[in-house]
Length: 529
Image (cartoon, rainbow, N blue to C red; front, side):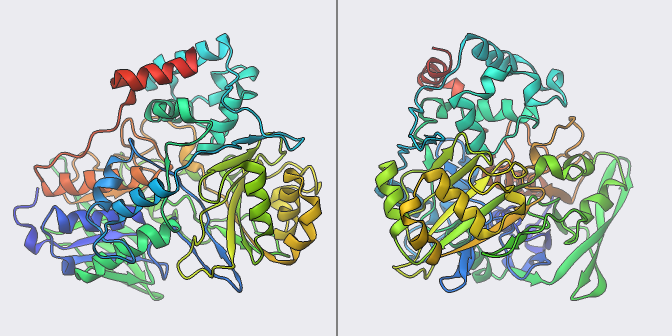
């Protein structure tokens, strides 16, 4: 606990949403001067995995498209309620999101599409009695009993062929071999989505991509309060001291613009360290190039955690999460279209205007391809006659139905051809090809946080005995909460700041939909009725 926060200096390692949120909580709730807060980031931009960039001429790209949710994202909404939006200082980011979703509510009418280009009745989940028993068993088992077992250890083949699994896995990017504990947490955390999983009407989207709608306004708010963003800085190690079970971080070792250096931490200083990266070593491809699947950890996104984990017990085991690229990787793509032909045809086919349809999944696609058509503009400054579409494939090593090539070995044009084939839009294919730029992104660790794990493989946000340091990001342990969400990173940041500063403010509890009788009844009736 810090006696007086006015003299506290805070060093935030990493510039992702977890560090940005922590900086905001230090200022807003902890009374730490912004000028005392340093964000140490190797990359030239803050935001981490919440990216979005490009231009109409060369093409736009986002690596991911994370969906937000009203009930479960309590810490994120708490943060964004105090951050002015990008364009209007009188409207918060939270209010902008509410207004946008009220104007363009999500109501997917073509959630699943089969190999014959038919829209399936996705309200028919397809669960039989055995599937329901298997679901109930997983939900009833404690995590200590589930352990490091896979999802497919708990379900029969029939379950994996259901509409329910096709929608659930593509909404949240689960593979059959992922952690059964993480699936259980998701089922409990988002049980309110059961009755609306086929429409995704519970989804909340930002007006622009999440970099423009969340990262930029948050970063601007921090800079206006004096927070110091130091780019070109890689933290390589942390020195700790331990006396009578109390551990303190005393020194940060770093490389700044290629030169080694260090930062000495005073008694009242804090450091909050982001561990690992789900977008580490992401590689980009274009119309005529294939993105490389990087396997040798080139960008250093895992190096600090690997170094720290060898220094003391309780700091986690990064090899559990970065040691199996074959089980963690998938590929996304962004289309930049200078003709409305494809979007108009998708609107006619799906019955959804752009921005209202959420995911469209091609259930029989060998790549298990899904796409999202955002409401234009999706990027700040995007011209009115330019349109975008985002998609991804979960199965990157299976030959495509229309190209005969694996997604991992396909150029952007070949990814576009596979998409047009899945849609059955041969009559407009030439126009679409001639007016579209495709950017692909291969991400070797994108679902690594779902890896099968034991309880000690992820460190606590504040490890036992820690007094002036905490860990942030997707690879820390927050009981009951779910990784691969913006909420997880923000919740961890709030927990770290409040605990380290000894603030008498509660972190909003993890949402438990089953505690609400009406929600529980509707969800259970959908799944088990």
